[in-house]
Amino acid sequence: MMASASPLGRVLRSSTTTFTFGSLDNPDLPAFGALVAAEAGPTWVYGLVYEVLIQDDPFVRQVVAAAGELTAERVEDMRQRRQVPVEITALTIAYRQDDRVYQRLPPRPPAALQPVWACDEATTAQVLAEVTFFRTVLNAAHCPSEELLAAALRRAAACKLPEQQQAYLVNAGRELARLLASDLPRLDAILRRLAS
Image (cartoon, rainbow, N blue to C red):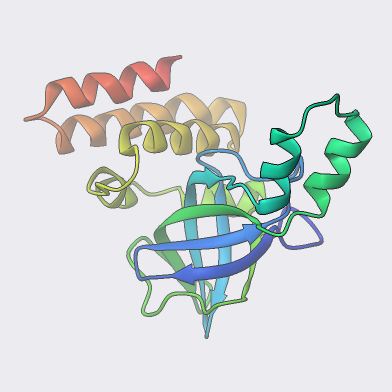
């Protein structure tokens, strides 16, 4: 289920529709559209990463304002010793309970300080196998839903065997055409993002 031996970070805040976790600024940060998971009681909650926020802290402001050249070693040291974590927000799309995946909002969100994990390819393929989560993403007004859905579909297709990828994307395109039959510009935008 987990793509790495250590968690990406820990939950800072959550709701039934999103969860935000804090992490160090490092190369292992999840990409836009990546599937992440956190435990919430007897369930695992799954979300698609849609925002990575890197805020400044007082020390960074002072260094930027000071004149002078920064070495690569000093910049890396400051990134690792930040007082403010990188905040990553995921849109909740599914949960797992009793070894079954439900593509709907979970009974409860993950609690503060719960570890958040990157999902491996097998879990990503399983959680994103069905098309029920499309509407959840499309109705999310607080995130770039067209970009997020296209990124998630590309990632899910890449997790499948090469001979299954085309069929998965065709099925996804059919469902999108059904859901967005009255919004052709939006449908076109998503299909163009999938093709590129």
